[in-house]
Length: 170
Image (tube, rainbow, N blue to C red; front, side):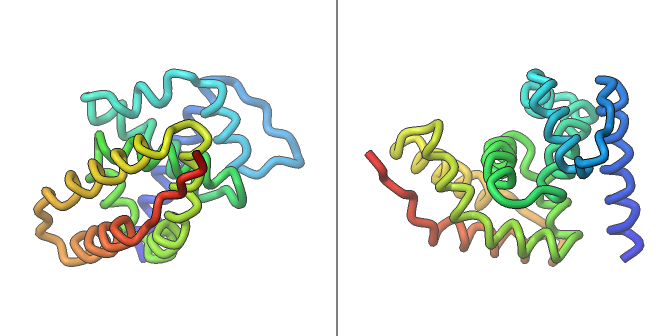
């Protein structure tokens, strides 16, 4: 539990630093997830930074996305989840580390995969979504993990991805 708390506080600290850097005022009717999401929408370079080869820069951007996803609900989780899925192709270990340490987040992430892949239909064609899913599965299967908890999450995620039927609305 102590590891989870320190990881969560690190994420909140990084998210708050990002918000402070962009001088976002907090409104009374907003939760932290809404504010972080507003910061993401404002910072158009965040996705580029998350794909960076600089692990510190990428880590800060990825944690910002993860904190935003953790604190959202409804349709906002789908849009953030699609971005997280795309970013997982570039830095899968950040996400495996995050979800393997937090059982609640892990269950929520696995349950939301159908909705997330349905969310891809807004921006991508059917074949592009299938290719993204297959590429992600290939990449994740190629990872060798020593930790049992990380391997358990990875296997559960791969199983979930393999069972997803990508919607074809064309």
